[in-house]
Amino acid sequence: MSKKSVVIMPDTRKILEQMGEQIKLARLRRRISAELVAERAGISRATLCSVEKGSSSVSIGSYAAVLHALNGMDRDLLLIAKDDELGRKLQDLGLLTGKRAPKEERI
Image (cartoon, rainbow, N blue to C red; front, side, top):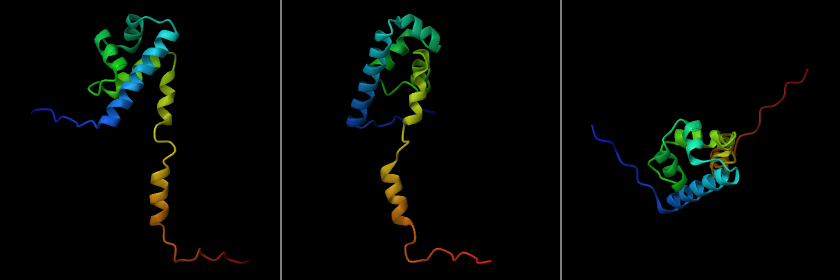
């Protein structure tokens, strides 16, 4: 069974490349060698190189492992899609606006 290839849009490719560059800069600022980060992340040095280039063929798990190896930066992944403005607007548009709120029971 052959793998289905995923089409990566140009803007997304640029974002991945920027993310890879930021990961590399974070490693260099911490003065941690590529070998040590790869070892801590449990990946090969070649995979780390792909992460730092922003390759779309690397699993998100590898990105997370590298971020974790850089002293817990994987917590930043929790910020992804946290504030979903478009989703909230679409949800609000779908809410029924013609109905009243239920009356409170009086005791």
